[in-house]
Image (cartoon, rainbow, N blue to C red; front, side, top):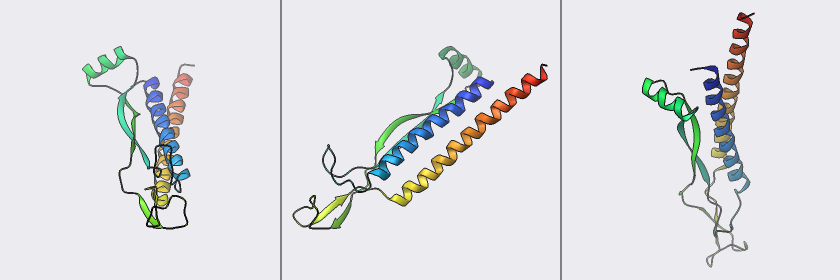
Length: 145
């Protein structure tokens, strides 16, 4: 694994965690949204991450034959959480049904905050990996002097 591959793997991790944070932020922003353009309350979203080869197609083909394929991560899908909506009795709410119940999004703010902290820690780990790779590259250049 070369330095460029190390940077590519870390960059893919940074990009994936940025996308994860964007989805978490959207979930937190819509925790009280009872009406969406699609109809009904906002439905929680989640990211699906998958391993992805890094580099040029020819490099990937050679590396896979040699068993030395560098893998990063990519966002393969944003999925809707199928858990049921929260239902609260509030007959004065404009979105209340005929029985006075309102459906709220299936979002648990505490769960979202834990997911956000996890994404931030993963982001920080990738930044640390980029800095370590950069330091190794600088040390390698110093050897050549």
